Image: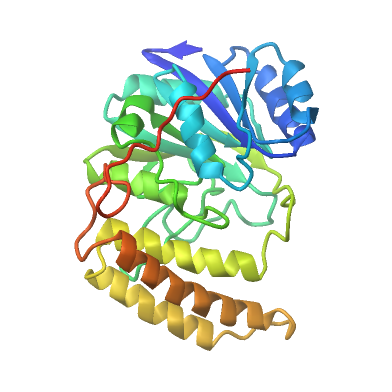
Length: 322
């Protein structure tokens, strides 16, 4: 599809979730016009996902052997293989609603200053459409607001977006060498990092309330969606996000460190069996995140095209198509 000057390449990253991939591709197939291309970066060891992709003539599978647990690297593989002017990332457990593609293509086609965006992402949670805070903002205390399911009439400016339904002007993302691919564990905050780097260059980022997907929250192939592992990496990666984009010496980073430590120590959960996971795991993640930040960040913010302290190694690499 081309709206104005925008050709939208859609990228799905997946591992061993063929039925979710099939459902996502089926929702894309229902649109009046198809995307410029649909690339499925697949780390699965079996042929189930490959067979699902073959059911849709407009989709192409990019094999990523050994890519399990390397979602951010897989995003960069999709970026390297794409040829559109806009690259849109969808989680494999999403379904697009009618009008999603047209809205993405139109917004990027009409506004050359728009470099990044995310769409409304509905999780089926009662009341999620009524956000009480701003959408996608970085607060002075270092916390991030979400509210990416909130209803709205017009696009709003954001600091960061949601990875399940996000879009970038391809040239802008390539100029920054793609995603920083060293947010470990759950890869949480790799999406926010890309947005913050783009907006630090002066680029515009918007929340598009009319580019809607339904996010089904598929269970993780290994482990629970939320647990010790999640809370550890959530805190670790947030520390890394803030230290690289705002600097180890920034008041924002220092304020967040103090509040995150206090919040973990004073947490009171309803279930005494799960409370330790929200105390011990975040505190360990906080300590590990600070150590990682010292290794990979500096007192001042890193330039947006620097992948980590002392390196400008591009993360975008070529991938054979199959």
